[in-house]
Length: 451
Ligand code: MV4
Image (tube, rainbow, N blue to C red):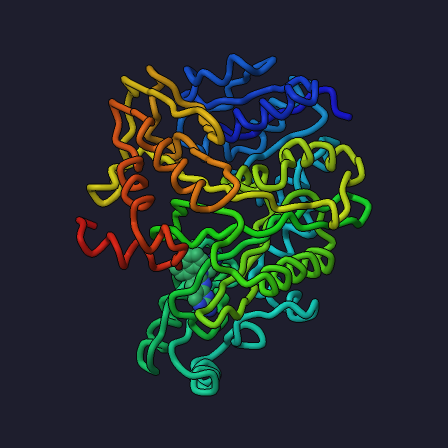
């Protein structure tokens, strides 16, 4: 096992990894930008190293700075957290060249799955359903038109290098397909330096279901069941839960088994997530793999009782998985609310600043993952996540009630947060009935609010 690990991240996930290291008896080195100099979690690390100015391109994204910090502090491994360099295969390769373990999947699997069109081809080969669409990349308008006519409008133009909703365009007729193609290629070229796009049938009002995977470096891969992440606004998730409500047992099993087949085909190891869309007939389609630990991983930790970050570290150290598939149970119902420093009543404007009051909820079945506290200054430079509030209860109805209670207890002053929005969601009858899809927030909120 490692004696010392560096955490190449900030905020709540840096704290989460620090805690996992402490639980494993491993020393931990934190890094920080000048904007995070005062962050309270840095005091919990055995060492903290400044890696540059506030902007992440000059600090948390600067590979040489991170590698230097790792060399100076004599760590054996780097945990990338989520975001930043977590899905950068080049960073994983640099770590390998420097003889530092990257706590994540092998760079080859990251590179393969990072290309959405390649991932799609692999899924097809592994017998995993994909959304009907083009065989490969789209090279000319005529081919796109032929395909669109064959599958029928609406279609979705997707960037091969995209992901998380970036570089997508819906086309509902020939004209919008032709203009959309040009725009999507241009946008993808600018954003990802790769203008290649492909076509899919557009699934209307889908649910977003994802499967948590864990694989060791000896070829064993298991799933830890699914999460429903349908509640989102502009690709920013708001609420995640497990099990997915109103999902037939046969569909749940089929989705989870598909995810394992795909991960095996990709020679995947460490923690990862396979994302699917579910249409209104409960047909599921693979969309992409997230080759990292995700923000919402604690939802799965609660229902399975497995500490995913701890297992990531063990796997990177070469240990075999400690469970077989039959040992993984999905117990009770877990729900997470993402608490962001944003004004949900005002177009979700970012709301950085000093937290003047912070009364955290607690009690039975409540977990709060947060690096914030009273007096903490939320910097304007980064993602606005300030807390993840989770509950775990025997049934979904009890989990919803527990979350409402916890949200009522939670008091934050000095900054705006998404807590008031969550309070509304948790008393909404459609949400309480588990009638969720990716358009829920726009349909129930966005129209009545400024955006
Ligand atoms: C889709 C889709 C409808 N049809 N693909 C958005 C992010 C990326 N991971 C895939 N996404 C979508 N792909 C087809 N063929 C709708 C979405 C989508 C979505 C997916 C998951 C979660 C939220 C979403 C919000 C809007 C659109």
